Length: 286
Image 1: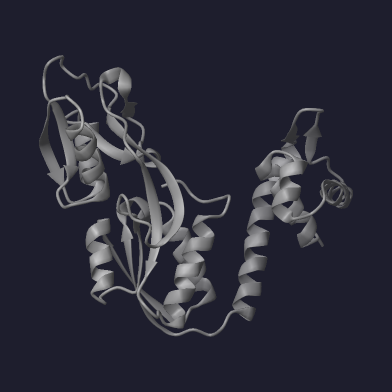
Image 2: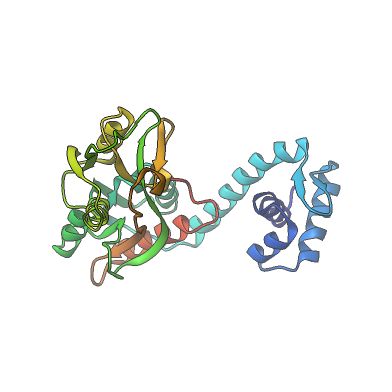
């Protein structure tokens, strides 16, 4: 039988790349973590790490154990939370921007549903301004969206750069207006891009609009235009443009969780779960 505490220490060292940072994550001393790894290696009768004075790397046996250890810890935590969590029921109406829906959201909802099977989730995907408006109107209970520029409402989950993205093959013709692909509706990314361009001397024109991230990114991939994207949404086939191409800097994006006033227990629990999972060291990329 493998000890879960030893597996937890093993995963922390593997993910943090060393004993010091693993000890900080686990709130233990470095010597305690080192002893736990030694005990696990004795139990498995396998060396799990290659240690040097400068680095710690997994052995082949360590690589093989890592995936199993993560799954075991996830099962252990899910079982523990399922037994200790309050029995919740009802419906929670969740609004999410597309940038989150394609990355952080699915594993978060899967985990929440496993712990609270009595809660029904209704998920709506849209742009930040519309979702926040629906929350304020009482049509949504929780919203996971980009924070409007210059505001501090909502609970900040993470911050990342907003960048100019274009196809690998895209070339800006000297003297020509910058072709833009933007969200059709008012959005944080659209407003940030237009504000940056209006403050400079670069000529530009909107040649493509879409209600979705998929649409504006497709236009960029096709070489039709440049579009502002979260850095994590830049995929293969796109490159980031900047000052070298004469483009102005863009502000960072802030992703936040919003709740209706006096949320019920199910909505508040979902908001807390999304906040905790999205802020974890293993937060998926968008």
